[in-house]
Image (cartoon, rainbow, N blue to C red; front, top):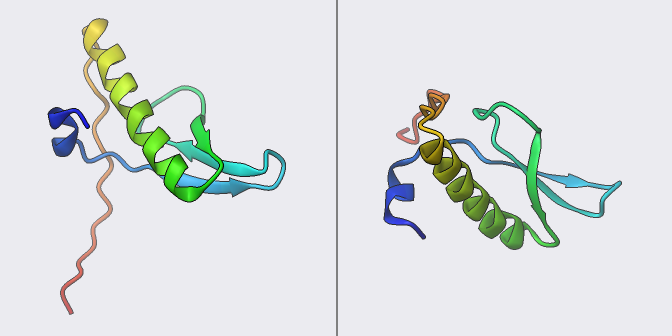
Length: 79
């Protein structure tokens, strides 16, 4: 994994598709097509999603576009 990826806080949505018979991956914070990649297993979808996010950030850098602001859902794991 690219070291700069560790600081990115983007949501990755993974959803099973009966129609496609695979897990679909989306990044809600990025405009454009909803589904960016997929995987036959959940783990494969996660791995492909990380690669897709890396590709998105590289593409934004190459065109000097600012990355979208990550949407942060307020939550706490402390009880």
